[in-house]
Amino acid sequence: MGELVDIYDDNRVKTGEVIDRTTKLEKGKYILYVLAIVKNNEGRYLVTRRSLDKKWAAGKWEIPGGGTKAGETSLEAVKREVFEETGLDVSLCDARVVYSYKNEDEGGDNYFVDMYLIEKDFSKEDVKCDMTETMDIALVSLEEIEAVHKKDGFLHYERLMTALTEAGEK
Image (cartoon, rainbow, N blue to C red; front, side, top):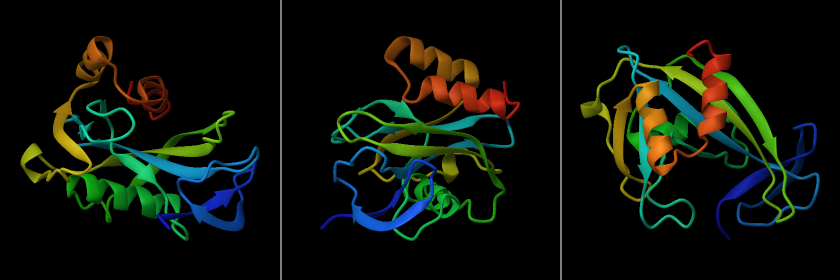
């Protein structure tokens, strides 16, 4: 069995059911993902490029994130995911949800997503890529994210822009 996750209902309440992450979900059942908008004291945002051996969106640029594990809160998950993917310890940083959304489709890919804004004093040299997750990192401006999106696509771009607007960053 793979990684275990909690199941949530339509109202985002845990049902008490725990399943393998790869299980296709029935209508009305969801899992929870988190994404981190990590901003340094120079106003630059941390972006990562997905490893080429990823099954979905290999080689694409995105912000750090991933799935919550069974028993884990959204906040615990986002701090863990940032550390796993970038080596940055954001455990003591203020992290606030700036945007949340729900996805449901016929293929059973049903989930909630919390997007966090995390501010931390760090430089590119402080970031250590987990090469199984990411093949590159960059500290970029919003304009640079937009340029990447126009050229090659940036994962979660529209929702990222909505989150940044909600957070007063745009």
